[in-house]
Length: 373
Image (cartoon, rainbow, N blue to C red):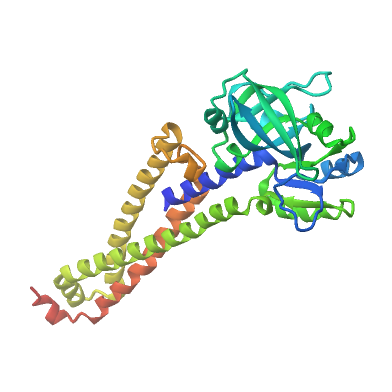
């Protein structure tokens, strides 16, 4: 139980942080009916008033602009389709620093737009692109059906471990997208909103919704990438199932153990009754000894469970397929109050289950018990 709850908490926190670090917790953009959420956005003009209102809401940590556009990367006649994510000079790359494998993030200068791009490690490997290589990027206009080509330098390579992000996105200057799309200098694709606590995501999303202009819409990352969060929620179900199975196994083993103890001590029970021992007193003797056995088991389980979790936390000896699990090392998060609660609840359930077999003591007759072999 300790291992299960620690690994589930670790998975949910680590994978959740990866998704939120790349896209924020909420996304604000122009509302468009019957259009995919992850697609080129309809431009909206920056609104400092709305941004300030959102920033001042309790729990909101950061608001950043972004825009995306379909593109094709080309190197030595090898091509790969991506979504070019444009950001501006105020973008805080601290959230993404953990994903940077080589190089640096793009720099913004006084030129019309930065000629640098950051691509993912899988894309770099597929196209055989190295750091500081110059590549062609073909930006596709889905409305006009035209393609515009630019030459950009690869200044950095990142890897999130989330295949959908690594194979789909590259990061560059939003000013390039404005030029290609013929947008105004203050037009963007939308805003990323970062929160202090992801648990407030739904509540703040509802609050922000009413603060936005009529044509704007706010969505949580759970709506944008539901399959990732559905997968994480399944872990909660698995956790409950494992808890139930472990509880049933523990109860059956303890009841069986105590029944054996009572049967082995049938003659002792008969003698105690013959000398005036009450049923309640004899039951308490068995309960004390069986509780001691259960407590010893719980203590050993605590040491082993917490020990394995801490060993994984500090050494990472359990490896995973990152493409399938979004992480290369099984993440662990030990929440000590939950560990303590598991131990106490297990002891309580075990104690209640031990009362059942002690009822057998009442049915034992002293004369037959003393003759029992």
